[in-house]
Image (cartoon, rainbow, N blue to C red; front, side, top):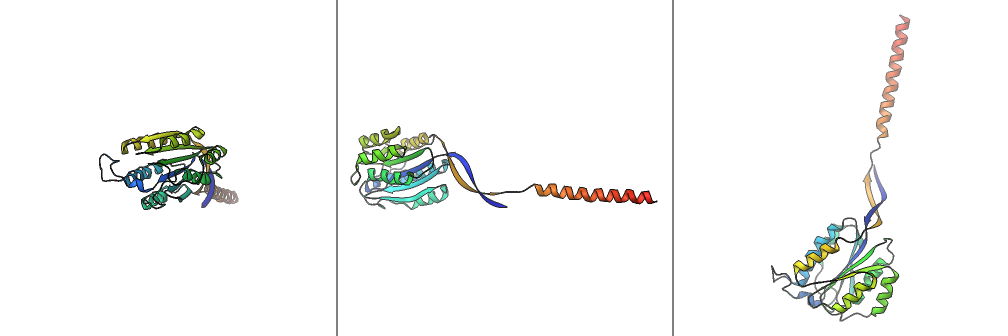
Length: 235
C-alpha cells in the first residue's frame, strides 16, 4: 500500500546564489584546463555539491543585471543538476546585482520553517547593478535569521562580501583557482544541521494479515481435531 507521510530529517534550507554576469566568461580559473571559463568551473563544482546535501531543501538563483529564480526550494537534486547544466553566462544580464541577489534569496527563505537558513552566494566582481541599499539587506537578514556564506573568485569585492558574511555570523571565502573553490565547498558541506519536514511516499506492508491467516488455520485445525475426537467417541 502506498501512503504519503511527513517525516523529520536533519537538514537545512539553502539558497545557492550564483553570479552569471559577463565577467564569468573569463578563462584561466582552472589551472588544469585554461580554456574553461569561470562559469564552467563554478557550475561543475555546484553540480557536485548539490547531491551531497541529501537531506537539505535547496533553491537556486542566478544574478547578472537582474535576479532570476532558477529553482525554488526543493529536494529534487536530479532536477536541479539538470537546471544547472542549462544556465548560461548572461542569462540574467551582463552586469552584477550582488546585493539584489541577497534580497532575492531572503525572499525565498523568509517563510521557511527550518531553524537554519543559509545563503551561499558566489560572485567574481564588483556590484554594478543593485538597486536595494545594503542597510535594507542587513535588516532583512537579521529579521529572518539568515546566515550568509559569501564566496569571492577573481577580482571579487572583498569589502562587500565580508560585510554580507558578518551580518549573522556567516563566513567569507576567497578562491583564485578551481582547487581553492572545491575546498571551500567541501568546508561549507560541513554546515550545521536542523530539523525540517519532507513529504515521502512509502510502501507499507501490513503484517497483521499473516497473523489472520495463522488464526484462521488454527481455528480450522482445532475444529478438525474436535470433530475427529467426537467421531472416535462414537465408535
